[in-house]
Image (tube, rainbow over the protein chains, first blue to last red):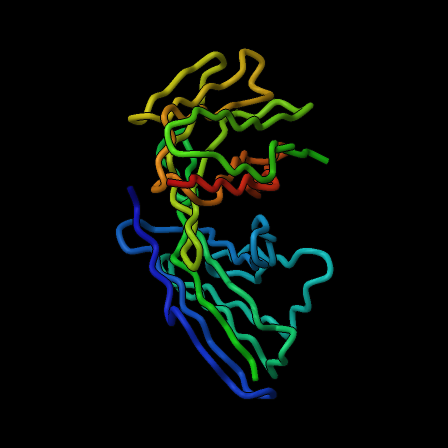
Length: 117
Length: 112
């Protein structure tokens, strides 16, 4: 299956700093990538849809100025958590959509554990 | 709004038992995907079902897509501790929203 990488896998930062998370599709081009947040033992919560070459589409309740998304190329999307606070601590997962003819499949990265102190 | 209702949400069984996880909706999905996620990792795609009535097998896992493409099930035979994890069903939203809709997830614990 297709591979999506995410970096870093874990990050600890101080409150008020910004953290950038990278998501790469390694063996396919992805015009659309997605960013999710996940709380323990819960399903994934979509934060935003990242479109290559255009602005991201944010879900209701997600602050676009706090969670900056850049999809600069067909294989890279970044999520920057600006002025991070302890409540931003979470597991962030990206995914990339691969389209093969009429079949669409979404592949997920391994996730980034963010801890804000 | 399209929803996927997944049940049960929590399941704790002994090694060797069988189990079934259900994913139901009132909406039609063009395809449904099943993922398995282990703690601290991203979801891993297990299977995609596309055709109504389709049955796919992956070793001890059997996936079925309902005839009307509104529901799906995952059956595990002779569960093993290595099957422990969070199982998620997901389907693409209609109306070209481009968003993958997830069920609530089923946390499975298989005790040795």
